[in-house]
Image 1: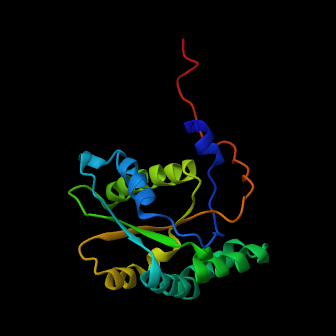
Image 2: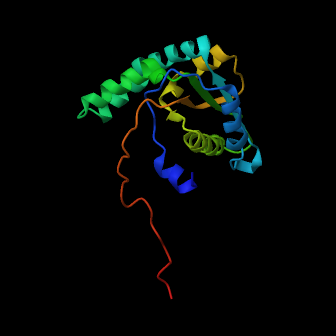
Image 3: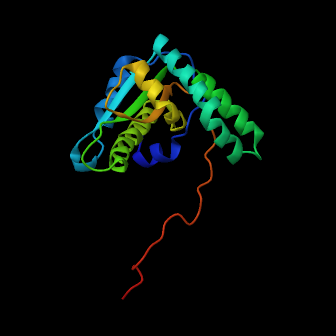
Length: 193
């Protein structure tokens, strides 16, 4: 698969087959995902890959995150699309049946929290594209960060900042590509003589 094909073909998956993802496949994804750029080359990402009973505990926290925080925002933004609200609520309650959940953390550094988040986000994007290349689906979720302390307590994480939660598994849907919004790039100085 060409890089351009992977970029344009990747979708956020919210329905997964129950098939387990072999640990070796996930290890291979991370072998390459961690070649992302990072602020000061600190490589300050930290990922926790969860399956089984612990995955079920993570799902319970996600359901609470929807009910106690992100749900109000979703309902406001999509007030004109009740189906989207219903599907989002359902996804937070089940994570679409994804057999694997990945929690992405940043190890705080000497720069800003924004730099830390950007570094981890670069590795996440690599992970999403690599998973797509392997026939796996993912969904990058930031809504659960409202309950970061609960995830950290559950997983025994200290001195790290929760950045995102990523679902992973074999897709059981093929979402359509959303349209790209216009006027998101501005060019300056190219017409100068």
